[in-house]
Image 1 (tube, rainbow, N blue to C red):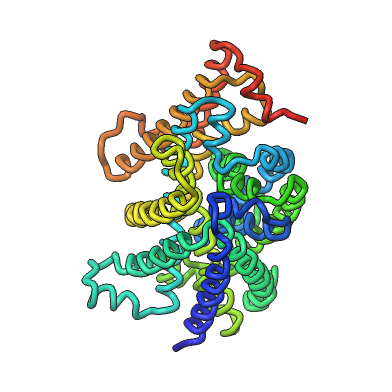
Image 2: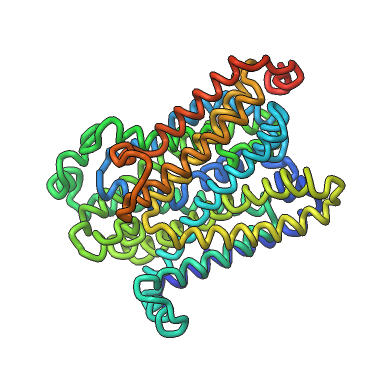
Amino acid sequence: MNLYAIVLAVIVAVLLVVSLSQIRKVKTKADYLVAGRTLPWYVLVFTLLSSWIGSGSLFGGAENAFRNGFPALWQAAGGWVGLLVILIVAPKARKFAQFTVPDLLETRYNTAARVLGAIAILFAFTAITSYQFKGGGDVLHLIFPNLDAVARDQFHFAAGHEHRLGMIIIAIFVIVFTAVAGMASVAYLDVVIGLLATVMCLMAIPILSREVGGWSGLHQKLPPEHFQFLGKLTFIQAMQYFMPVFLLMLGNQAMYQKFFSARSERDAKVAVFGWIAGTLVLETVIVAIAVYGSALYGNIPEVAQVPREIIPYTARHGLPALIGALLMGAVFAKVISTANNYLFSPSTNLVQDVYARFINKNASDKSILLVSRLVVVGLGIFALLQGTLWESILAMALYAYTVYSAAITPAVMAAFFSKRVTSAAAVTSIALGTVVTIVWNVEGLLLGAGKQTFIPPGWLKFDAIFPALAVSLLSLIIVSLLTAPPRKEQWAPFFAE
């Protein structure tokens, strides 16, 4: 067994021990869904950081950095700016202290907003989970090169689809992991994973800098636009990376669920400061590793064909064996962590917002725990199926972010900052934001396949975030102006001193 496989096995064993240690603590719905509302700020920092930085950064962001250089930080900057707003929202969210974002939507608006919100979150978060499976499969493929041959010879996978065996292995692992102990398991796993990933990424930078010949050597190997403010991106293209991430950050249910899990309002707010620092450092370092990797290995055909793999490839070939193995293990662990978070979150929606709300209103804690675990399995399979439909993790990430950004974020932000937005406006905004995003992306896929579209092809060159967000915001404003103001008891929980 090679060193990379040994490190991977040790990491998996540690994750299992941490996860299994939490099982005995899970006795009630609150224990499973929000860790009994007992998480201290330092645990929140790492679980927020780990849930935010996964395949979208390590593979999608890396693919962006491979192609565009440091201007890829426009994608990360959306999260940085969003965090400044979150400083205000975090203590308010903990004071509200429910289980899910649809809980919030129903309290502020109505039942229809709750149901539509749950549907939008399900589509967005299972899509995010799906590309975590794909990223994890990529890591297994690089550590175990013979896995493709096994997929072809033993499982009869068609040529070009061998990586799906790695996806299936990761999916099974994550589904079992997530179903075991709920939020407490996810949060404490993230502490271990966050520390490992941060330390290994920071250690990699000086080594790769020496390999490429320092800053001057990097400039010699890459085009000048890789170091410019926008590079070869237009401002509109930069905004297409920035806006989905910014809006996802503002309305992200996985984040709100962590705030609902906080020990206190103070813990929630302090955790955001740590999250800001961690995100600034780690997102920048991830882009830097991808840029160094593109300078070292960008001309190798196997790398150029799959640019999303540049960070694990660089870990395997550009670092000393032990450090490379640990960085590869950290990438794998981050993918597992993010998949746990984004699989767990929509399962919470279906249990809390559908099962316990409409199907079995008097469900016992034991019944809810059983249904929660079954739902995790079902959604994990749905996410795996989605992973077979997309090749680019970057494209999958932007699609998922846009669904959430246009459908959920405007209504959630209005709940915390506006007393005038009405229930009818929120329902219209959520519905139209979801529909426009999905239709726009389906039309884009049809155009790419050479088929007829009813949206003009010239429009489809722009990301769905612009039309979807415009329709969502306009409907929120116009319908609010055309309908009677909400009752005080609807907005009072969000503005109490």
